[in-house]
Image (cartoon, rainbow, N blue to C red; front, side, top):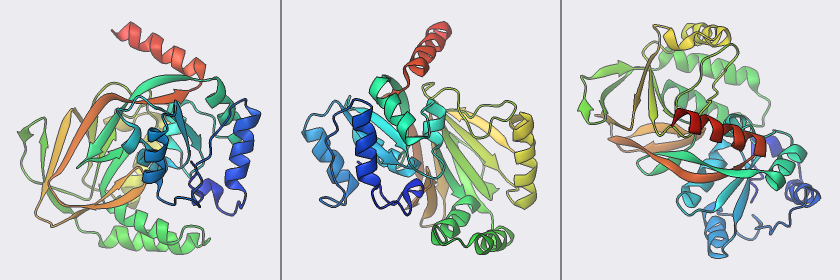
Length: 303
């Protein structure tokens, strides 16, 4: 199943046919569920589950992959990922090659492993759920997507940063309710982000069964610049601009009628309280064989 509107497929008219050819060349015999026959991804996933498929291969960005996980988590059906989006953060964390031909080969000769599935008010995300100023900037990104208006996007993002007012939130981690705080940005990650030289937004483990809350009270242009520099040096987790805390359950209360949330790059409007939870090992994914073997060794050593 392919999301032809993914960032990596813009302007490619034969996207579905090209993907099918690559999978066949890798030795697979794909059954294509065409978007033209059923535009709704959820219904196509329902059909795949009803047909009893061993695996479902989904091509798109992180948002598309999360939508597939929403349906496949807990079914035992493996999810194969073709990283055809703009960022492809999950594919990078799983060691899946970003080239179409290489990714198809990895699917044909890979192995399955279990990863955690996080959700907020029932909406699944596999990487990161964000509130506050980044979601407002994300709206401008979607508006200018594919238009080439990068300068207009940068100016709109800067204006948004200068005008955005902090959110008054009350947080509860694992049932412990805290005092209200004022934040311009907050993120909940599905397992912790790694720290190391050049480790930009990458996770070494996706199966530790924990959420991680990241609070940024001064989110803005200079905050971003300082944090990017700290990430490049591998020292960002100790910066005073950021507070990091793990939990199994996180609840966010607000007086607002709704909060804009961005799950793996996809925007949602949800009514508070926002209830975050994690389902350890709920999704099976296909990864390169070497990655699966290395992950097994790490898990065994930690046990």
